[in-house]
Length: 86
Image 1: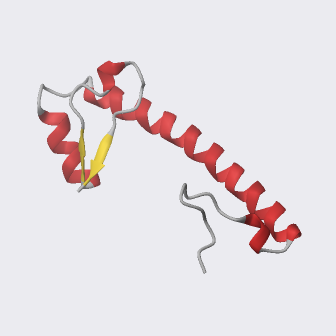
Image 2 (image 1 turned 90 degrees about the vertical axis):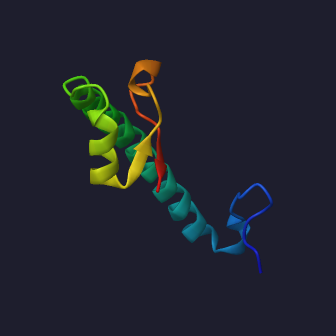
């Protein structure tokens, strides 16, 4: 059976309560780590982009990460260049 609803929310009542509690804690720690890591990665990418000639960053990013950065992502002020998996 499906253990998540139409919104993709996991049905924690389908597992024992102690496992559910631990799973929620693990998910929270992972989300926190992802937010911190994404911010750090974004700062690093924006810093190196600022040191490259115009147009070189996208080629470098695509070659190194198999993703395509969106145009002017570092200039958006978010500190993280959005990217699309190839």
